[in-house]
Image 1 (cartoon, rainbow, N blue to C red):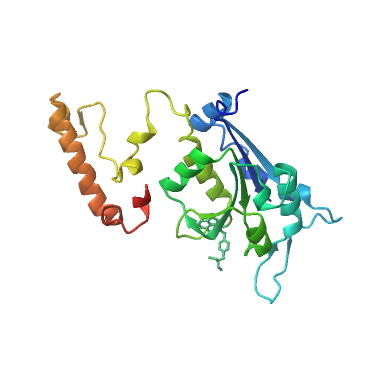
Image 2: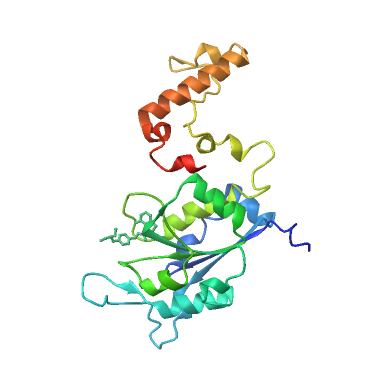
Length: 247
Ligand code: 9D3
């Protein structure tokens, strides 16, 4: 096949809990994208790359302290198997090795867009415990990403979030009736409220403007409601102090 024609993406997930991903990629847009061969997703148990007799994947931190640290050897072996090299500078073009970590660059729509536009092969490394041996970060990782300022038990939920946000931006992943350009974060505003039938439910009426068929008035109402909601819940989107403006 002509290389410029092939817009498909390969995603590999490295985790010590592969069962965590057993069903998450089997619904909706992700399922359809897999069936349409827009994306191929494979989940790998880091333990399968451990070579010692106890299949050790973690160890105590040098310098002391609580918790365990993921060992470098199995992760280097996994990357060499999946990419063909553990030399970051020798990765094929379009290869991203993403470490999910609380220390990462915050995930924004612009980051998902960058991966969707530029990556052909993404390997996600899910951290656990207190973290991952820093030599993984220093040598293998091209992008360290966090999904926000709250504490997770590991990188697995973050990997799922990134996979979802990236796949829906791949060419042809959404049905022709939907467009990623209309998504609220691509516009920099939260979405307006939505209503469907019945026009009155338990005494609550749908706003009259939505029923009168005047589309100029409807567009104006929707914009005003979106602005109101954004001022209330996400002032940072309006003042450009959250990095979202790099769209
Ligand atoms: C005690 C200090 N903590 C660092 C902030 C330790 C720690 C907390 C949580 C170490 C690892 C984790 C597990 N979290 C992730 O691996 C993670 C994560 C997150 O916790 N929040 C947002 N995004 C991400 S991406 C990976």
